[in-house]
Length: 115
Image (cartoon, rainbow, N blue to C red; front, side):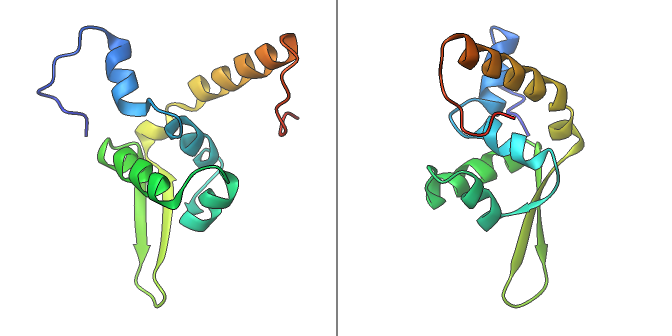
C-alpha cells in the first residue's frame, strides 16, 4: 500500500507516487480488459525490458493496484489482474487515452493502435 506515513503536499504527488512513470499507466490500461500473464504484457509492450516490467508490476502490487496470482503447477503460471482500486482507474485511463488520441490527431502524431 501507499506509504501512509509520508506527507504529500498535493494530491497529485500521491497520484504520481502510485501510478507515475513511463510504464505503470500502460500496464494498468492493458489489465483493464482482464488478467494477463507476464509474457502477454511483455508482448503488448515491446519496448519495456523484462527487468523493468518486473519492477513496475511489483510496485503496482505493493500499492494495492494489481493482484499477482501464482497457480500451483509446473511450470509456474502467474497472472496479473487489477484490484478493485486498480479497476477504479478505468474512467481516468479512458479519459487520458481519449485526450491523447485527440492531441495526436491535432498535432499529426501517429499512434499505431488508434481505432
